[in-house]
Length: 354
Image 1 (spheres, rainbow, N blue to C red):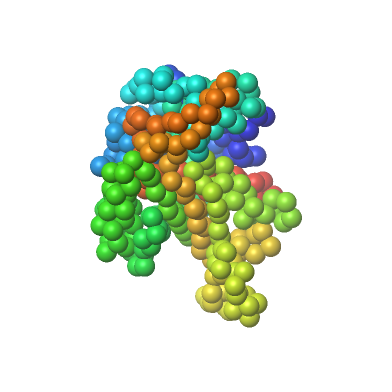
Image 2: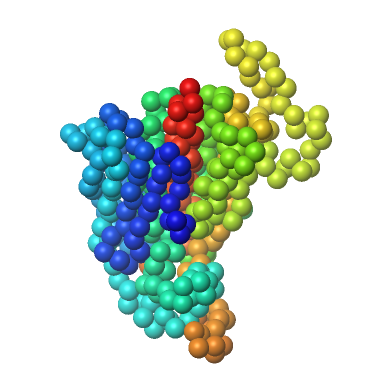
């Protein structure tokens, strides 16, 4: 496989390009009898879709999902589930005049180096548009996890240096930056708008908390649960760093501070702290799994940048068109989706051995 598929038991393959006719996903391993409806998938796609607020790209896509196979009268049959999302608001004109230039921060050069050809229309397969297919597949994975009482909550931890201090999960979907700290929303929005006005962009940090995951998920050594989650999250193009639990701060702690002491509560083993992020030895402990992803500033900016052309000439490029000045709020359901796909794969794998 050429890197377009993910998972072993719950296996997802995505297809399509940003300015092609459609994008989509094929999922193998969906358990039969799972209740599944397009509405179950659409609610997460609506959280990711473009044009949803004043701080996102104005590209107007409904991202309406169609279930093409694998479902009969609202129930999965056990055969591959095919999901299709049509591209309805495509405009490649802004890319015509710069298609001969390698845009800084984009995959133009590396795709050409690998394949000898690239789709210059909106970055083709390297576009964030591809992640809509992941979100659709992730919504199916969430349905599997719900049956085991596993739930994921993602939110904006930080944008352009403004960090959430309070975490009220009930407020996340009430604001356009999806911050759990409503007192920081206006500051985050201001930083985004300031970047947009100067033709620039900003990044941030997404945090996802998984609750209800019991002990025993994951495999030792090479298929550790934290390693699989890192693979999943880092496969998202905008992610440049991954943390779990204490993350990078673990390097600054002593062992006596980092180690999570065990105790018994309600007949089950618990830990008093959670610096390991709910995973020990690559296997879930039953505590909350806490993951953070560092999201880069979007590469498409109007600020002039030096570059080279496909025939080797030094030039300057300005990228115009419909782009996000910050993708942190829209990437949250994408990170959730990749984690859900990973966890669903592990859940189904564990059930094969139970």
